Amino acid sequence: MAAVEHSEGAHAPAEAGDGIRRRDFINLAAVSFPAMGVGAVLIPLINNMNPSADVLALSSIDVDLTPIQAGQAIKAEWRKQPMFIRHLTAGEIEAANAVDMGELRDPESLADRTKPEHQQWLITLGVCTHLGCVPLGAAEGENKGEFGGYFCPCHGSHYDTAGRIRKGPAPLNLEVPEYEFMSDTSVRIG
Amino acid sequence: MSFPWAQQYEPKNGFTKWMDSRLPIFRLVHGAVGPGYPVPRNLNYFWNFGVLAGFALMVQIVTGIILAMHYRADGAIAFASVEHIMRNVNEGWFLRYAHANGASFFFIAMYIHIGRNIYYGSYKAPREMVFLLGMVIYLLAMATAFMGYVLPWGQMSFWGAKVITGLIGAIPFVGESIQTWLLGGFAPDTAALNRFFSLHYLLPFVIAGVVILHIWALHIPGSGNPTGVDVKSPQDTVPFHPYYTAKDGFGLGVYLIAFAIMVFFLPNALGHADNYIEANPLSTPAHIVPEWYYYPFYAILRSFTSDFFFIEAKLMGVIAMFSAILVVFLLPWLDNSPVRSANYRPKFRMFFYIWLVDLVVLFYCGGMPAEEPYVMISQIATAYYFSFFLIIIPVLAKIERTTPLPNSITESVLGHDEPVAPVATTKSTSGDPSPQPAV
Image 1 (cartoon, rainbow over the protein chains, first blue to last red):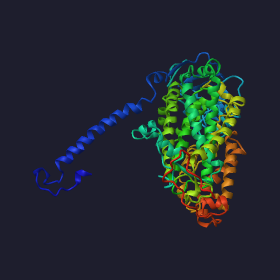
Image 2: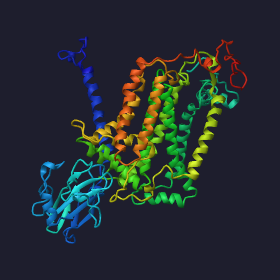
Image 3: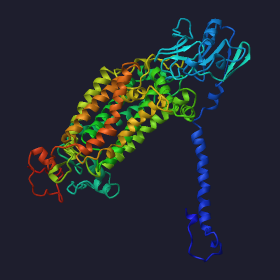
Image 4: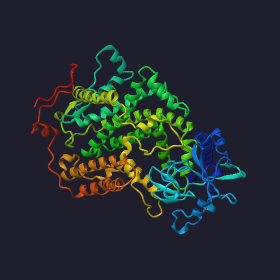
């Protein structure tokens, strides 16, 4: 950089000592100041493409759980993506807990994937972790796969009653979003 | 630039003389695609496809600008507005079918153009920049076509956008934030549709700009030719106009017949029926595929099924897919063989034809579901694809025994090449293009 060049001339007293000329400083300052301005202008040019306020406003939804009977599931739409809310039966919970963690591709217990006291409510994204298809098994009469949970028809991934990947190409369990119970019958997702 | 015997431009009437000393645009056209551009006399019909690709780009820009007058990029009405174009707008069906099939024809022209380039070694010195700029055009066209396919907001539009932007989500740590940033949301919606429309409208003009650079770079060394032998004397060339304007004109006629057959009789043959179902984020089509021109790369993407050390299979597929295109950019440096044309490289020719078959195999597998045996077939085909560029071409350049080259372009055409009297180029007074050496 120009700032470290040594000047041979000894005309100005300011040049003595560290060898930095006043003009170098002025040059640097004059270039840095607009560079900061350019940097600041880039922020709106880039950040405008992030989700806007109205999109973010839809990023949490409230779901009423009262109509969902044990053994049933519903699809909700959250952030334009399908959401599976499933009321597990006692048998399904038992089946999920009976699995040996060692044989799971993505080891998680049912308790890890549900909230304490509300273990019967399995809330996951309805997006296959392979290539993003929507698995079957939430609606009545759909194929639930070999493990009684969900089945993705695109490339044959089977999920169990805890939404865990058991067979097929998907690498991970169905994603559990952030949510909290507002009451025993109402849940806020997001 | 070009050759010293190129016909000089001389303005003929008052207007062109007046223009020539103010804005010499007629001089520019004369030298670029007119009588002032000497071209090797032995070009075959594979040399038509540059002009055809340029024509296809113009068709896309013209039909696209008109379609944009009727289309509305809003998730709620985009699908309906495309149906509005099809049913209500006068001749809207024709404009849309011409635009949709025009994209396919643009890619057909580009693929043949690139294939011709690789067969005849056109990427070699001194035409590396022509080649690199051409590959940039191809990349830009891929991005433009992808975004264009999202606009009708059908099921394949939506799920294609989701899967392709999901590829970016495979990048470790920052992928998901970048994906959200690109989409302006958590899944494709109006925000994504609108920005895709904006960029889909912009990029063709960027492509047109790079096309100008591409042609400029071409005119420095001049066109290559099927022998790969450099132009040596005036008798090796003919003026672009009228010789190649006529030849390209004929090729354009054949192209337009094929284009018309598709637009009028098979308008949806290259599309996908699912795209006539409106986008539904809650239901996935059974079988998501991109447009046909991405099939080979889609097959490469899906051929990585197991983790590679610490890199996940999904990320590996993404890296491989992009590498499959980027590796082509390296061709001028991978191939050190001094002989350009495959006509004189028997071994290269054989591996080139295997590579073409390999691409057809990848193409076929890319359109098939990701299940056996297609996965295994695409794995083998992917291995050959990369071997061709990274192993076969560099090795052949060192060991291949090539067959003898002709001494000149004229010799390859006539069987002999006699020196002729220098052609009068300095004072061409008539309006006719420079006379042909009568051999």
